[in-house]
Amino acid sequence: MAERRRYETTLIINAALEDQEIDAVISKVTKYIEDNGGEVENVKNMGRRRLAYPINKKYNGCYVHIQFLASSEFQTIYNKFLILEDTILRHLNLDLPDALIDYRKQRDLEAGKATAEKAEEKSE
Amino acid sequence: MSTIHPMQTGAAARTKNKNKPNPLGKQKVIDYMDIKFLNRFTNDQGRILPRRITGVSAYQQRRIALAIKYARHLALMPFVAQDIS
Image (tube, rainbow over all chains, first blue to last red; front, side, top):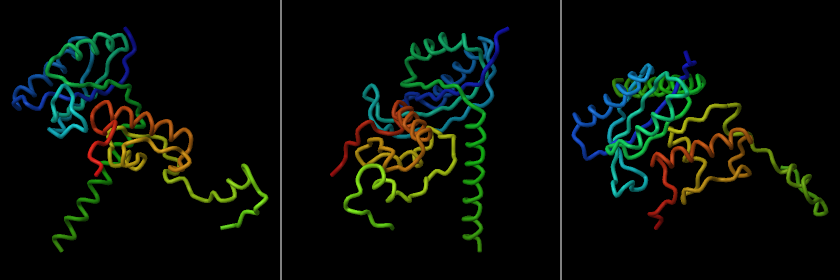
């Protein structure tokens, strides 16, 4: 049994697709991870946003962030799978250190606090 | 604040003027998804600023440069900013 590590993948999916089709692509990717002995921890759909430069003549993309546990041997076939998927414009697959998870959690907490304070000011 | 003697050149002259604190402190983690944060380390052309201007540590500068390159790959940041008028 190979040792499993924590990874994160950010996908840019073609924004011209319908919401259901995008969900289908996400479930296809998560299913591929789970079929190959991985464990999906978190999936975050960040929605459509404008790209900083066009990719394949497309100006908008739907960003999806997936956090999962998998073996290092899985990464090579996984990257090939993502490249062959036509609906995915770009992907970035990285090792996810614990420090970055904590940093993001803390930042989200602070952002939540700031918005809560703003809401309080408004209500007052 | 200390004045530099006209005869003073080289490293001594440069270090004497440097009293800017590190803007990041001891922060070790850089998130490539945080565009607002990374934008502080690029100019309006989209180029990565050198360490003598950003004032961060060598370790932080390496991590920032890597994070900016990841963000460019994901089209979160531009390689070259186009609309400079």
